[in-house]
Image: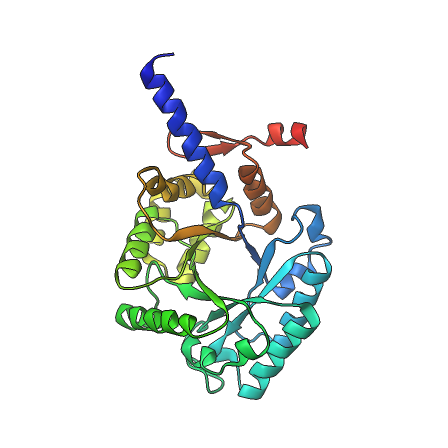
Length: 315
């Protein structure tokens, strides 16, 4: 083996290390309806995995409470969403927090403003929820706030930046640990530039990057259009320029590999992990992620392939 081959091998080993590290505490998410269709989460999800519970417009928070209880009883860590604009009163907010903490042992949550500008109660945004002090009152120890690598159709970039700095300030005076979970994105350059920009503006919160799970390209396009994420739509449409590509299953391996590249150059990004949006199905995304975490993958030219046969033999 010559010096060049040895250097390449060392680099590949280091890259593999960073890839598996990125998946160490990855999280997933479900909707109450989605969970009701799954017979047993424990068939394909490992104990203590964090599972976020999406709060869709029109959802009754009692459904979220029951979903959180099921997830806890199954041996996982439920993390419900709190959508500010969908909470009709302070009394409802407090009841919601009291019940998920008391009945489902919830310690970790994600706070979002909520889709659209329709507001049911006194909370127009996440700041207004945080300032109630209710999450501290009931012992919430980890609070996620939304990150927007491609901006938001509901709020200007300037307002997003201002709000993030306010969340950093609130994090310094509360008992909970704060972190950012980004909206899913398909373009690594957009994500890395966004992380660099918010950190340069004063963000100190650790960043969890939202990535799409395993899904057909047509499915990813549908969700990107629904969420209005611009760069990602252009990226996906380019990939789907040939009709045959629309039915192909897509894996986020290239995106993940590009997200860890700065670590090879010892560049700090603030990115500490991954949240997987299982757009094409919870089971296939979870199994792909666990295989990657276990090192059952092979680096390719610009991504990596999960070696499922190796996984089956070793398990």
